Length: 497
Image 1 (cartoon, rainbow, N blue to C red):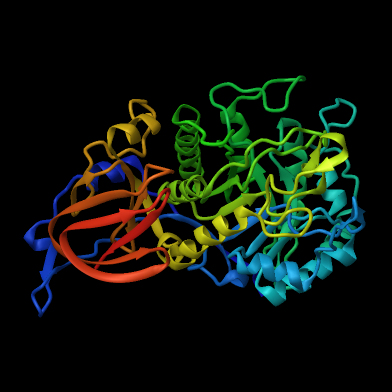
Image 2 (image 1 turned 90 degrees about the vertical axis):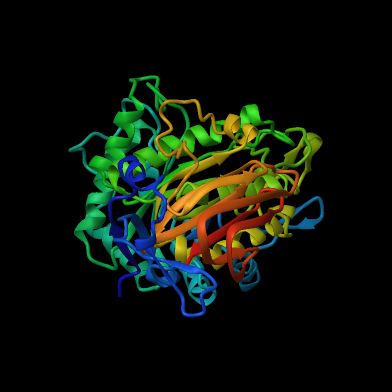
């Protein structure tokens, strides 16, 4: 049984946008319903798009919603506080109830624990990329000339041994693949290719190797490198042109403090614009890794705590802008807080810094923010997973400054503010993702403000019928000028009938 299915189709491009974004619907393009109260738009030929979906998660209509750092077994006590063993029904149900259906990395590596997580994943509908120590270590070699893997070198594990080991996991429908490398640097790419080649030579459910790419920076970069330089173009060409990883998962953490200002948050749009272009070029879907909290502590130092961030409006905005850009998977980091992320001065701990579940096992504030975001995703994913993102309209002075719409390389921008039947946007600042949905029109409207509500009106050339999905509630309405009230960071989907 295949655990996933892959559809690699050409995403909407600027050429498509130029051909169809500003045209008004004519009388020949619409037909009136018998009751005469609104028009129904004629559907054209569907624009091709890129999608990767998993049968276990529900098939082509279900968006993967995942997290990095899944539940893990820790145990013991800290200052009298018992640290739970999280590989259990309680915590898998907790994750499932938050709307998460995929875990891309868990710290536990032993086969028995991996199989236990796969069993629990089957029970709660959560797919997993297993952590396989030898492969993870091989793909994660440090930048040392004596250790660097080069094409043709012997791998540190036998191919038969590896495939037999992985095949024992493939007996579980919840097994989506194995975790390869997170944000791989240039010196890991040959090892990634060698491992992926082995996986593709073995048929046990089209298993994938999970790779989360470096997603920040621009121009000529030194990816991991004090030995040699590699450009951004070379980096992505290796991963998506040579290794052929079938999805572009990129990290982007832009909330650096409480109430992060626009001047810092604007980098979110720079990255999404670049990653969208790269994903379209290699004909792969775009996945987004965003933050659930902050104050990460990879160095395991005793760090002072600051006010927690991002808040609810900021996290919702992060998710909804990714959807507005056409992302076909959302991932949260960290899903579960590692214990060392909680280290505070004087041997104390702060379990309120990050993760939807803290290292102490309790739900954090981000659990509820993520749950709210995922409830909306579940209500709209059947549309977004089957749509081509044509571009984005930016409305309002502040929104235009945030999205840096003066940049020449923003190919996704629909600069005249029109898309098919949509003639203009009025009201408060917002962003409108423009989609082709099975030949018809869909719009994802996102509030610019992370603090205040917005009143936005979509103005059309005729009175159409729409399905509006907001806060996971669907309503059918008819109007020529469609008003929307959006809470802080909120998004609403509008699908023309």
